[in-house]
Image (cartoon, rainbow, N blue to C red; front, side, top):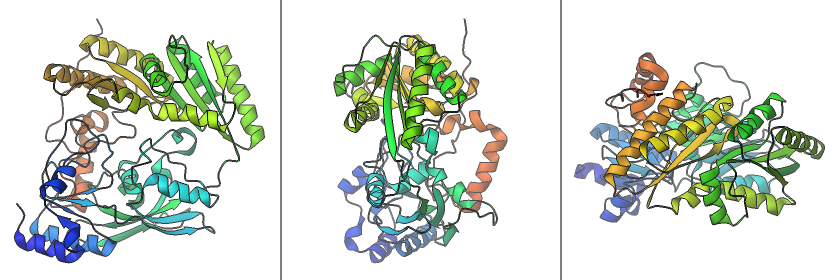
Amino acid sequence: MLDTKLTQRLRQIVGEKFYRDDQEALVAHSYDGTPMLQSLPDGVVYPANTAQVSEIMKALAEYRVPVVSRGSGSNLCGGTVPVEGGIVMVMHRMNRILEVDMENLTATVQTGIITAEFTAHVESLGLFYPPDPSSMKISTIGGNIAECSGGLRGLKYGTTKDYVIGLEAVLANGEIIRTGGKLMKDVAGYDLTKLLVGSEGTLAIITEAILKLVPPPSSKKTMLAMFKDLYGAARTVSRIIEMKIIPATLEFMDNPTIRVVDDFAKLGLPLDMEAILLIEQDGDPETVERDIERIREICEFEKADRIDVAENREHAEKLLTARRSAFTALARLKPTTILEDATVPRSRIADMVLRINDIAKKYDVSIATFGHAGDGNLHPTATTDARDHEEIHRVEQAFEEIFEAAIELGGTITGEHGVGLVKAPFLEWKIGAAGMEVMRGIKQAFDPNNLLNPGKIFAKETRKRVVIDRG
């Protein structure tokens, strides 16, 4: 229960209807896109501008009340679940595009704007913002920045961090800082912009962002390459990159995913394939035609069973939509869907998929795998039922071994979903004890009273490493 004087002060800052502590509001903001996690906040506040965020933080700092900043709550790592109560700060009122600078090719936005709305506006002006997380129709730019979201175009264009060049943020004590700017070069001190991108709301509350824009590609072509040999598909990925071809999109689906996606999207995919690669290239028409032809030759060399090139943009969009709908399609199978992400060097994709399959068999759980083959980011997805506690325990054991396998193959525990609450016990596996101490020092400098999204990234106890029996 919050102090009455604090709640009165919050209402004075934002207005009576923009502070809520009724049961409906508390329950609605007690969970996010992560299954099986829920914790009630003590109140919900909806600021309209940076000045209000600053005043809110000054009040919360005085009363030592924790705060979780939140966009749409579509993250999959428990990043916006208020596990220590306190205030949830919802950023959706701060949803304006403040400027599109055609001379500098930048956009300045408030962070509560929906990603797809922003990209649509930019494209209407003849420009291009490449980051395209699968949740872009509901996720906010602020959420993308907090998690450093990736997407299907990450191989060629990079991820969110590559397009954030300036930020306005409010610190735990209410002070406002501004980092970066409309600059392509800036080495004045530590790069606080890049530090805040991906910090998951644990260092500051980001209120505005300056985003880099680029000219749009003039041409696109999309193809599907289908393989009965998993290693053939993996070798194709490596060979495409080895030949210095960088596709805009290079996506992977394994057989269980193919079956579910085809049933959902009615594409008529052959169900006996072990893997399908969805490949898109963009750029000037001559380069696109040349690259698609060279990619076709590589697929044929690696004995692709079937290669289909989209006939037109409508057909291409249908193929891309099918891949984007993989999670939705899998979610139809059972009441609970746990979508994880682990990244390995792209040369180890086939090894990782086979390890995932072996682990799923070992624990007798259902796991389908899809993801961004071009950058080695795979999404093993378990379909289960939260009411079956014994099966959920086996799923958790399976994912522990999957994270261990990813690290063993030279990879990491998360490529784009973030650490949050779910991956916190495994973070030390990746960065080591010394790395954890450095991160704790950064957190202490920004947030000495641990008010910003407490309980995330830093686990109370590191999980013991899994000892995998190779038989």
